Length: 443
Image (cartoon, rainbow, N blue to C red; front, side, top):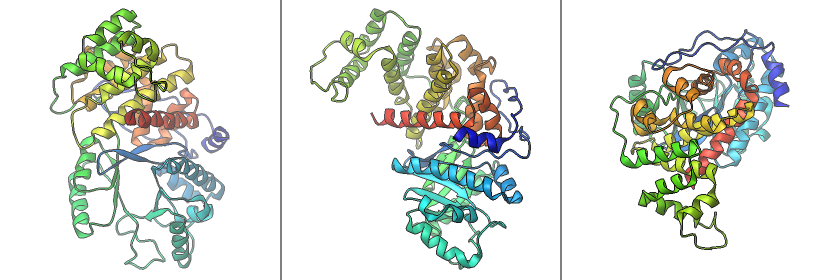
């Protein structure tokens, strides 16, 4: 059903994806690669929302800004209804898991969807007024109905919707970051927080993790940023011995080293041995309560694939402390699982190597280290090394797709997603990857 909806909205097949930039250069967004009739709609988690405490607490869902504007200009009720239905359906799945589901939608679209489509956990910002919005006199009643359904309704500063008194109070204020003006935005946020400490603040489109942490520092409640994990930190740190040990163990598991070699590597690290045995003797993995006392037993029972994922979780937990450490850990695991799921869907023989590449792509930001240092202890698949180090080879398509989706460019994302089964499938796999990351970081 979702595939048919997207084909209807997307029209003719998209142009082939543009070439990726060389290592060290961010992909610069260009002109939309799809024709003006393209109206991509988000049906899965787009960008994670980070709370004041630095943890991922929900997701932003959006219709691309350019597509939103074209929809409103064309006054196409059928396409608008399809887009609203898709977004709200995806938001419900997130809200039902107890997470925040955020979107910015025109009031008219929300009115046609009906308050029955809303529920607690949904945060909806009303977009700037357009010709398709309901009469101003109806808005107070609609706002009461939306809030009565449990949704939180907000808007941008100075954009109180027509029909509400100027002093009307939103449930939150929405800010969008503009590249090059982050310092000014932080000052505005600080002033707003001082003037009204109780009013929640949401900031989207921050250009990176440093800007996100600056926003969290002044008390923003929810924030989202684009993230190029391969960008190296300004002050790189040497990798601790524990991190290097885990990277070497991951390398052995990835190249299917002999079990005796894997066991010996684990035994060489007393702390790692203890954590592995404690994991295997937990109630979740050993419900019978039979004591497992040897690393050999633990490796045999857990299996290579699960052992590899367990070591990956241990690795991301070695990240240096910073305000968004928890979010970064989840982002790294979600990226790794996302690449693996995409590879499995394409029938890649080396799907596990794509998991490693996804994780490796986030290591510089996660570990605050140089990319070369982070990869030195990993024996990457040749295609993964080419993609990460030189932005060359077929696996670069995975990195480019992830970066485009992180930036919120669903127009170009739809073009790139065609090579992976289309945007509906890609966003569905993204949602599964985030669920994996959430479960893994809670374990």
